[in-house]
Every structure is written in C-alpha cells, then in structure tokens.
Amino acid sequence: MDHGHLQTLETELLAPTVRADRRRLDVLLHPDFHEIGRSGRHVSREEILDALPHEERTAPPVPEERRADDVGPGLVLLTYRLTDPVSGRRSRHCSLWETTPEPRLRYHQGTWEL
Figure 1 (cartoon, rainbow, N blue to C red):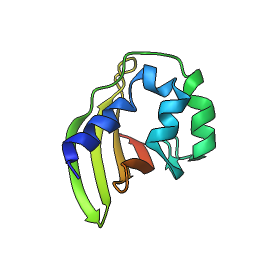
Figure 2 (tube, rainbow, N blue to C red; figure 1 turned 30 degrees about the horizontal axis):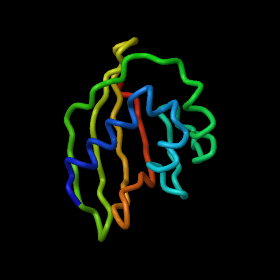
Figure 3 (spheres, helix red, strand yellow; figure 1 turned 180 degrees about the horizontal axis):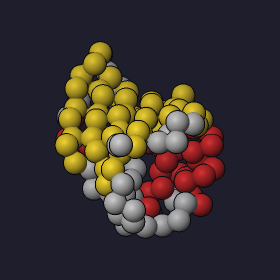
Figure 4 (cartoon, one colour; figure 1 turned 120 degrees about the vertical axis):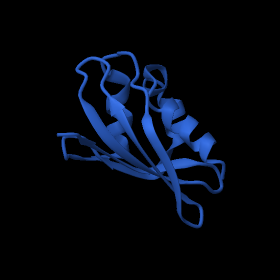
C-alpha cells in the first residue's frame, strides 16, 4: 500500500468538511474503529460518528514529523505531530490503518505534548 495515499486519507480526516460528513467517515473508519483521545478517554466508532459532525469548525491542523511503518500484513502505522490552530498546543498521534481490501482506519490515539 502506498504510504502517501494513507497519509492523504489521514489528513482528510482532519478537515472540518470531512469530519462533518458522516457518510465519508463511515467509509474511512473501520467497523471496529476505536480511539484513545488526547483526554485519555476511550471512544467508540459510534461515539465518534455522533460527535464529529457537531464539532466547532476551525482551520484544520497540519501534520508534521510524519512517519509510516508497515507493522504486519495489511497494517500500516502512521505517526505525526499536530499543532492546534487555535491554542497552539501540540499533540502526538498514531493511527493504525488496515489496507485490505480498502484502506480503513482501525485505531487512533492522540496525546498532548507536555
């Protein structure tokens, strides 16, 4: 799987228009998707699908320090850093993508930098 394509999909998930589009999110998020948010809270796929369309819209953060690693057959781990466009706070993120048959985000975790 082309790592650049996965990074493009990951960046797409940061865009306010995509976050507000439940149909697009349904395509990108694996049925077993879950995440650990920057708050440390575990969030299910359904909670994400319900919450994202109601997020306050701001300029999307731009990923920096990107890395992609094949971690198993059909699994790619993306890591990167974000700077919140409003507060300026930084966070580290990792996302596990299943790449077959189509790329879908399986797991995500964000952690605030100290």
